[in-house]
Length: 345
Image (cartoon, rainbow, N blue to C red; front, side, top):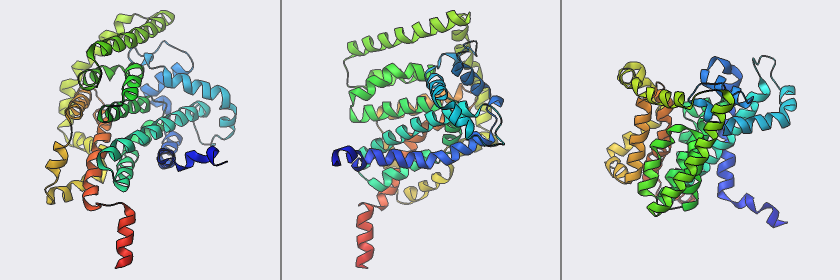
């Protein structure tokens, strides 16, 4: 009998459950009070969930999350509609399907963030604090509560960070094959994998080639059935570079500063004890080359995007690591040590 419940002794299981419990309330509230059809991104993904491929050129290829949500809606849509609040506007069952998928993906990402931090700090409390810093970010609830696919892309990026830190080839290969399906901007992460992954370059070229063939075959089929031009999507991708000037002006404004603050929130106050202890430089220098290049990649994606804060949200795993390191400076042992010390006093 014990074998059936052995998973209850798994730390990953409890991190997943705590992540799910922490995220669900905020994300459900976002879904309940937000009209998804007012957001152009949501309109695209809701359309893809209905197998309508005549969508915006860039987003219409991100089909995995919408297709899974569509399958969930097909199986349990009737139950979801029965539970729908009276005040809800729109397709509640489809919205609920996206909510469940996004919550699960972010919770799994929470497990990987925990592993990433704990591998580097070896500190249970600090690792949990790092995960909570990600889950309580303003953008996490927003992205988990609406029909969006950012949760999948976020999961892939955390897999890359964890895979490179722990030299986990399985995670790296999964990210190579799943990353391009999440978002096209994975192309800015691929070079980091190529130069820092513990894989021979010839094998990596083969893996990326196979991954590219699979993705572009899918894109060709989507364009074929929607009657669209494949060149239009590429032109639209390059058109993002025209956003740089606008994004820079927006960034160096009061609203831009607020957007940056919205990513960290008051977790940024943890910098104060780190500066007072003169440990901040040590924590920053502990980051490896691929983590600095990851930061550069995210900043570049933010600049070519008109949604700066939404892109900067992708930095939260690295920020979580910094917060955890600062916290671990003050709790050299686990909480059990702290409690035992109090009892002695």
